[in-house]
Structures are given as C-alpha cells and as structure tokens.
Amino acid sequence: MKKSIIIGVMGGGRATPEDMDAAYCLGSLIAKNGWVLLNGGRDAGIMDASAKGAAEHNGLTIGILPDDNCSKISSHIQIPIVTGMGNARNCINVLSSNIIVACAGGAGTISEVALAVKNNKPVILLNFDLRKAFNRYIRMNLIHSVRTPQEAIKKIKGLLNPPLNT
Image (cartoon, rainbow, N blue to C red; front, top):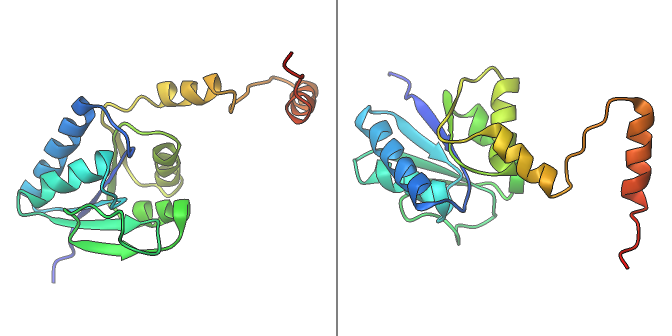
C-alpha cells in the first residue's frame, strides 16, 4: 500500500480576504495533486479556507483540533483528530506532515515553522513574512533584544517592575 503524502497547511484563524483566497487555492491544488491536507481543523481563517479548497476538489482533509470536542471544527474537515492539547497540538500538525506550508498567521504559525525546522521538515512560506510577524510582537512589547548579559538583567528588572503610568 502506497503511503499518502500529507501537506500541512498552517496559518492564522484571522486572515485577510487575499490570504483566504490563497489558502483556498492552495487546498484545491493539494487535492488536485492527490495529497492529503492537514491543518488545525478550525472553522476560521486559513484552516477553514484551505480545507474548503481541498474538500471541494475531492481531497482528503484532516484537522488536528486543540479542543476536547468538535464544536469549532470546519465543516470541510473529514477526519477530525480531537486532542484536548491546546497549542501543544502544533507538534502533531508538524510531525504528521511531510511538508509544511505556512500561510499568514501569528505566534501559533511561527511556532509551527520553528517546530518544522527543528524536526528537519521543509517549510514553504506563502505570503508569510516571518520578520513582519516577529515585528508585530516587538511592537507589542513581547520581544526584546539586548547585546550583553548586563543589559538582559536590566531589561528583566524593567519588565518585572514596570514604571507606573501617571
């Protein structure tokens, strides 16, 4: 029996219409090539659009759900995997895929890219600029950069004891 090729499509639950169109097209092309589409399984954003594209073109879709139920599942997912694992499900997304296509997303998608690279899985970035994604978190004051251990300690102290807003 020939083993199926699984293409992991990762991306955000919130996406622009252009990114949704690209995800739909990607899903349809995955199906047309006879590959299996695997994603986060939810009924939103890149997940729903890519699953819809694959399902509407007779493709097989697998959704790795973070919840312990199917209440937020895309109607285009044929094989739901209910994990109850929250964000830890990202590891299953990556390790179960032969190749990862990362579409526009945020921290969850970034974590999937990192997991893929750590596990020597090829990653294709589809309209997903990692620098731009990281810059968002820098602007949110969640990522900080220093050059010395002393600067790191100073930054830690500042984060632990932020100045009072007056």
